[in-house]
Image (cartoon, rainbow, N blue to C red; front, side):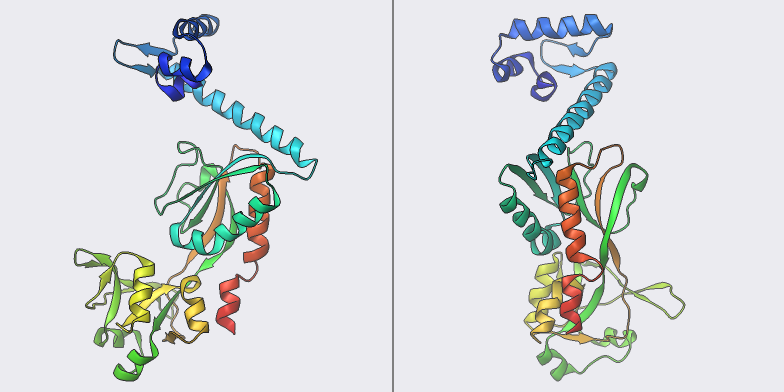
Length: 296
């Protein structure tokens, strides 16, 4: 595996504290034993053959199984250990998931947390991720196991001063006559989606002077009184509770998206992953903390 990760015999030899010829001989013996060529060798590069890639994938799975077995054995002593790789949506992850991970890290000092935050859809296998928190539909659900953690609802909000000056819209169509803070850039604003009385999602094209491509920036603009914004309930729960923002058209339902904890289907649920999933489920289900804040 060191040769695969390093991409060369020389670098692998340095990491293993071996000679380059020793590493090359070890690979040659392995190829002889397997009866296949694992690497294509040229003067400039070293790359896996198809058989080598399949063998490498199998070794990675075997190593993961071994790590899981070690973690499960450690759990017998009520202590989590080893590395846990988690991927989170940037804003939601930092605000609502990271505090739970930091609590687990405090409780289990032998646990190594490797947390990445990105809004792109990662591949658990290719990116080597143990657990992902996803918001939205699970397009690759056939290869994944997912535990529901709730639903992200979108709500319309505005600063009290804005509503005092320009009035409150009474219907979604009234939004055409208001300054709407849109998500997008380059003049391409995403439409807002609302459910009609038949349960169908209907797009509404809105316009405004401000087009921003980050949800926290839209929140800042709404707090500054620049117009009406459509934002996730977990993002606006606190300013709504402090009456820094007010709900607009609260009876209108905007499109929502499910929130899941996701891991590989062919991967045993390690004690580390189970610990995180159980804690998040305890905190978010059946009522997420931001939903409790919005009910007050």
